[in-house]
Length: 463
Image 1 (spheres, rainbow, N blue to C red):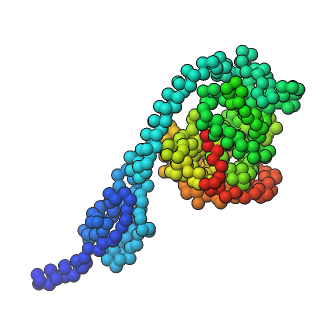
Image 2 (image 1 turned 180 degrees about the horizontal axis):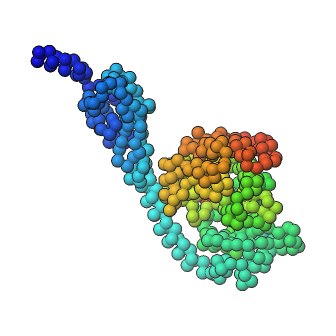
């Protein structure tokens, strides 16, 4: 009788076998987990022990399968049973299984070139500070002009009544760390109806490299002639200072408008239509803006938007340093490929502008950005690793289709976004139809041209 019992016990157990699967994983130290129990790999082969499935009365009971590594997000692989493994019915979803970094250390492990980028930021910052101090010593003759620029518009500004390129400066409109902007009229026949804006670059920013890049940016901007693009009229150098002549726009930046006004769906969509038209027009001429943000959009007193500052560098820009270049954009609006691919011109296409446009739409419609952090590097990491917050989290009354359009525009891969800003704009306005009257916006968007071939031959607008 004892022998019969032992025989029945043996027959109740599965055949002695240890099925195994071959997996390629990144990072290599990732462990395969059955529920919460690890499967120890041997040179890429994962051999399963039936003990992991003990307690199953039914050998077809599914168990969760996943990959796990410290500093990375768990990667679910589906469910398997002992019978699936024994019958070799489990197939990995892809040939190479890559876990998504969830910590800075893992991220730097995945992209080791970032150590070079961070080192470049530190070295570049030190060189910039040293260059600034040296240039200040070389431009003492201009110190009074610089002080008045920084102090604001007043009658003691030495550039008031000075002439630049046939225009006489009559008042200051504003100033910043790099330049001051003035209102000027023709010097021979002062006429307020012919007033222009003149941006005068600080002398300590007037290096030979800066002038060469500045001149190239002017020549590119001069090609653009569109009612929603700020017109560049010319440039030159006088008194050791470089200046830029632009059309005079009376109004405020879109950023200032958003601060001073509550949400207005009709106005917001009207402004977006103008911005999209301007971007699509630039793209049709092979020009990528690369730094789209509310501060670079003017809202005129007549309610027209003007896109400006194509490619102008700013001190608050996030930069990466390689052997070939540096400027990539502003952290809050930067597309993932602008970080991962560095300053490569072929990596920065019209779809990079589309990504920044989606963030601007969030800010304009919902009053929030989809990615927010305490510092620029945290925000950049969010652009690369995190999924954007759905816009209906902030405005639940918005259409679901509008949310889907924006999430597509914010896809991590440029290939998963819309083929052009024009296509994105059409989808955006159709989805936003319940919010406000569309007017002529859809008609104008449909009439826009297609983008030019934005490849390595595209004009480099960065400074």
